[in-house]
Picture 1 (cartoon, rainbow, N blue to C red):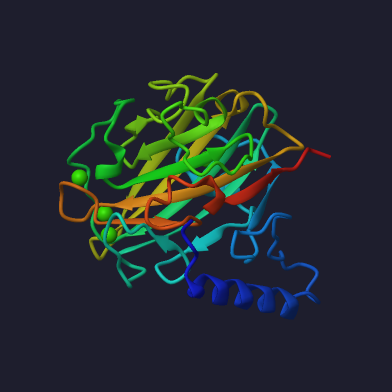
Picture 2 (cartoon, helix red, strand yellow):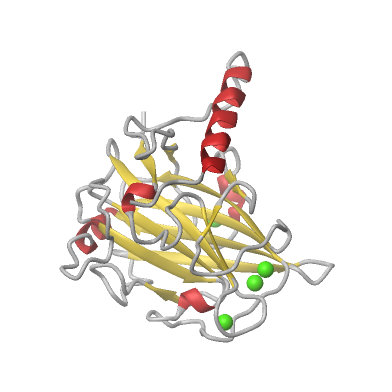
Length: 269
Ligand SMILES: [Ca+2]
Ligand SMILES: [Ca+2]
Ligand SMILES: [Ca+2]
Ligand SMILES: [Ca+2]
């Protein structure tokens, strides 16, 4: 089993210390941890997804007040299958989660120095998303923390898998039980927007809607799921340059569900 680098332990300790320092501030959201830690005993992050209907339009204004989690080259996990960078302006992002009665929503805001979309096209539902500037969302809907999310028997696909969305709106769900289901309201949908910056860089915004159906109809308000997110960064065409994950065991962060964080889908009051 892959062990998490000691830097992760230091980060977790620092996060815990920060939480203690901020404990007296009632308005500050505290870091939460799942009841089952990582195999090396470091705390497993837990996100609380509140109830909030969202409009899928690539505009994140409707997420105001929802806490976002920052992922930078210093706090995230670069997958060993690609290169890394030390520069947050090259690749960094923040993401948030919420839900309504039918689906989980994910918002992502990416900072990227160079936009590359040479391997995908808008409208594709079987796109090579990993080769361009794209998001990959990973769902462990039955929370069994399987060691191989893509085992030959496809045992994990009925309750989750990988849902990828490119900045141009191309998508893929090949590694789920629902290939080519992007854009269908009963399965999953998404919206993206590209915001060019004055210095030539881009800000990319994404919104996902993932129904309980793509989690096998076993997840929903009141349940917990395994979750991580990876951002793919291509800056020079061709294959990706960087893959930066929120949580995962490198290399192959997509593989071992035990390396992912958790989400509690908090019921509406
Ligand atoms: Ca929106
Ligand atoms: Ca970049
Ligand atoms: Ca890029
Ligand atoms: Ca590319």
